Image (spheres, rainbow, N blue to C red):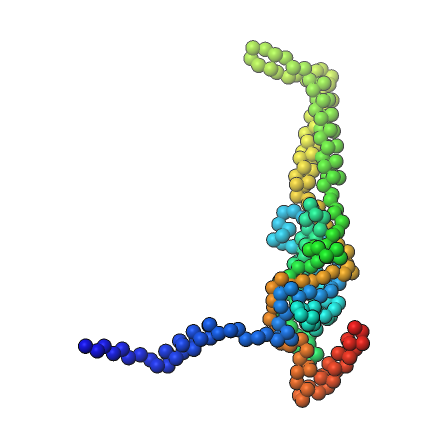
Length: 266
């Protein structure tokens, strides 16, 4: 007995082609359209940063803008034309190291022919000392708040002391009772009011100190390094004008002049 199964030949070919495509070697990537991991370049902070250190600082970091001051250095001594591009980062602070850590979020460039490129990037910012993060000034206002709480607590204790000095305690089988001495009602009232008010004020300062966290101040204009930790594919080439000299002759000539200027500066 011979059993024959009929199937769709086209579907079988499509499945075979999909399997071949899945097992095939990925196509090579052009450095004009792809920035590999480990690429780095020099950048300048265009704005300062007050990096928070406590609470939800890492989940809600502060934005920071950087301008790339040089072309990116790629592996094997290649370069990528990302000079004058912008990088948007997010920073938070760390009290133990007194550094502000900035991670990159997006890269924006405009090519020679006016094409805008805006892609998300993953990386970090290294400071002048070559370490991850930037060293800054640790600013904390908790000391003044705690000092105010201490003064309020001391004044509250003085008010309670005036209250007790004008009150007489008597012990009986029914319990302990307190009575205000004759002629000292005003002193007892002032002591009670001042003591309770300053005690509330001390509690307020304590709760305020729990909400205040130190910040790491980083000034604008500092020179840092931006390092990519993951490769990023670009929707267009970084030097688009030079790729089509027939249709974009003027832009191609402008691109060549920019290259000559960059070479002269290098």
